[in-house]
Length: 508
Ligand code: SF4
Image (cartoon, rainbow, N blue to C red):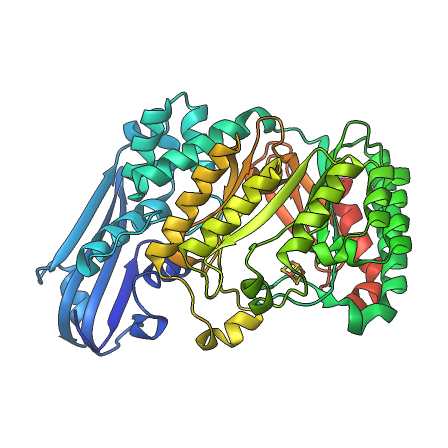
């Protein structure tokens, strides 16, 4: 490999962005660049070609060092021997085999030859192989729906993407758990309502979230505008005879609102929609926002699932990540919620928080097990662009890949001990060790809203600043997104224009 950098040339398929996402898992951004016409090359070269000749072929070739202006032409004509190469050919008959639907994606196959070559060059293996997307469970779903069993699904996923057998097994288990809850049904919808306020901003936060302290004066106007949007959507839902299957109020932290504002929103949701037997979740994420009064407001307004999110049970880490509460607050508020009668409580934790090692993470899991929530969402630390962590990443010690991997494994074992199984999963950019976020739940406690955000079989109508709606076409093939403006002041000002856009989608 040359110390002068890597030139990447992709021929026959438009996938520079996807290739960039994958190659940066092996090399720093500044080490590689995409070749532009007639450029003088001096360094390593990765050449990727996709050809369609009845069957179609993907090949990737790696050259340790080449120099000149006509290097790419010489490679294309087969005049230079690569140092490493990988070739995959897919025939029509392969695609018609059970699970073969995933081979239709040329980008996945082109990614897998890139992955194959680069892992040989660098000696680095990635848990998800060539996959860089957010929703890998969809691939396992294709296999299971085609009638493949667990082993057949695992084999197919490994063959198509190069992922590890452990991750293929996890995807297969998640897809199996999701299966009873997903159904293409244009009449069924889910609602999301965003409350973009929090007591303080966590180190890693990239959500639309304003500290209540500095933005308190905006809350009444925000609640008025949000109320208008809720009423409007309620009317649309009735006129179009749609059925609400789940409601999720997140943010921010909805319980950061004062009791009166929280009650106004919840009463309005109940008045505007028919919520008989509907899953209704409110994020009560931070214990420092929870009070007996607010829990009672939630209970009175038919909320049947809440989420109390410790992230860690280590006091020092809570301080590092900017949370103004103690581990004891978490336990206390959890017990308070149980006493008030919440029988479906989720908890979120994060593997790989700054400064944490396996011992600290194990301690968090022990404390969670003592509380015994009904579901547990295990996030892997991700350094997101809009976060304070991204701006100051050099100041924090993030866990090495091997430690983060061991933490997520420990979490899976702990969830199993609590009688839970994995039921939803997604991945993010810049996630430590290139891992995943996994939701575990006791049977019957799976969150229908979470499953639908990932599997995209039913539309989600989202309300509030920065909220993204997702409309699924009748045949499930087309997904269209509309996003409300993020900034609270702009949201209040431009609400009518956003409502008009929503109307067009809802009443199609
Ligand atoms: S609690 Fe959630 S939304 Fe609020 S600041 Fe922390 S990460 Fe962001």
